Image (cartoon, rainbow, N blue to C red; front, top):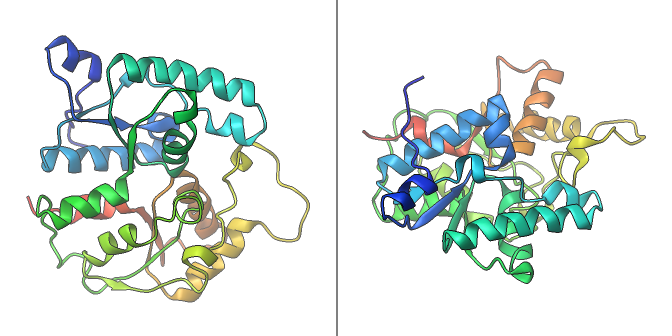
Length: 262
């Protein structure tokens, strides 16, 4: 994999520079081997579009979302206040997130603790870059591919962002198809709300398995996701249904990075 130059906030500030955007990488982007590929793809896009950004690097910590969803409010506030001190210290005004959980927490829950920022989910940011002509898409790569999209709970129902990811996918000129349960009626992947970190509850079927059935029924060759939890669960679902040779699970950032006109 080619080297990607990712600017770090502390280094930029030491040079007397103040990046316009902070790219919040998130725990999955930092530690999960599969999702590292997604944040690399998004960093590649930011560099390609000449966006003035930086990351916190080792100064970034978890937003505290899993702790809050699991009911540990004290741990959440400890995490949040530590992050806010760093963000405010750098006078951060605008943040871009690849994870809807980080996005929701920074946007909706940090303000009451003193962290008031303009927060973008990367799909909305990509839509803006494409509309402004800063990203040119090679429409030939996925032209004959059937692509569907799974709505992350914290992006869709949680923050009413439905159209931006769809517009980005449709810009690829593939054969876009909706899942039978989509937008506000979409089925959860099964791992949000701290479910990723606990044992399964009693039942006859895993949520990710049922959601994968929706994907299979759609006839799509690619299921696009926009959340690290969704990527993990649907990838597991595809393997569980033994459909790895028929269906690929790719993040929207990966799809765009693969289709950039250089």
